[in-house]
Each structure stands twice: as structure tokens, then as C-alpha cells.
Image 1: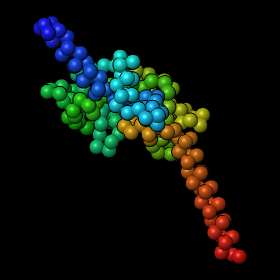
Image 2 (image 1 turned 90 degrees about the vertical axis):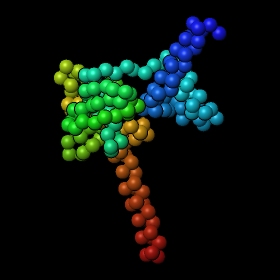
Image 3 (image 1 turned 30 degrees about the vertical axis):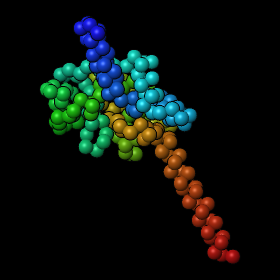
Image 4 (image 1 turned 60 degrees about the horizontal axis):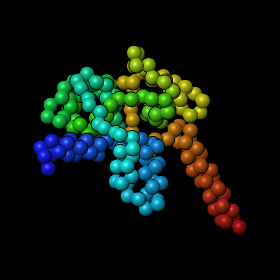
Length: 198
């Protein structure tokens, strides 16, 4: 093997390693595809590698001043800015306040694209998973819907992302779940009442 072939091989190995670090678990479509493929007997790793190659994914290069989502102690990702980079770790400052030093794999390029799920502090309801309608980058404001036809806007300093993709549901899904529990409890209560009164 020539020196040039060795360099090409090492360059390709570097690309593969960078692709392996790309987190497809936060992508809803990718998660659904992986789950379906696992049901047919394919391994998760094989499907993720095939996805990375098909989509030609490479790791996004982050630099000082970039807007990112950074992991916090509560397992949510919050908007932050990179204030420094050294030896594979990033110094970040959360837009809502506070600073941290995090490894690269806990920091993701910021995005607020239509259809994306963001966790927002919905008035009178608290934190709800909402879908992005649009994002005004100049004002750093995201416009979202709650899934019930209501819309609202939030400064990005007030939103967050749950890192676990299985929790990415809308407010409507959450209300339907609780309604189902309430109805089920009512039916069970009626059955027990009937049983004990006869």
C-alpha cells in the first residue's frame, strides 16, 4: 500500500468515525425506520450505518459564536451559544442563563425547522411538546402549534428539546392519553360498583 493509499484509507476511516457520532436517534423518521427494521430482524447498528451512508451524513463543524442545543443536567437540550472551544470540549453559555463546559457529543447544531418538536412553556398548561411552524432567526423567535389549532410564539431562550425521541408527542397526544386513563378508570369503577352492589 502506497503512502497516498494509506492517507486515503485514514481519511475514509475518519469520515466513518464522524458519521458514527451523528445522532440519528433525535430524528423521528429515522427512529421509526430503525424500529421497523429491527422488527424484521436487522440490527440497529446496521440500519443506522446504512442511513448515514445513504444520507451522506457528516458531523457538523461547530465554531465559537454558533447557536446550539446543549445538554443540561435534566436531560433536556437548551439553546446556547458556544463561547470557547478547547481540546474536544465546548464552553457554552445557555441563552436562559448559566455556563457549562461540555464534550462535543452533548452539543448539537441549533435548528427550528417546520414540523420539529420543541418543548414550550404553554400558558396555563406548563411544558408541552409543540410543533414548529416557522422560525424568525433575526428575532430568535419560534412560532409553534399545540396540535389543537392554537398557535403561540416563544423566544428561543424559553424552549427546550427532550433528547429521548420517544417522548416527542404533542399536547393533543398527552390530553388523549389522560382522557383514556380517566375513561378507563370510570369504567373500572362502574364495574366494581356493580359487582359490590349485587
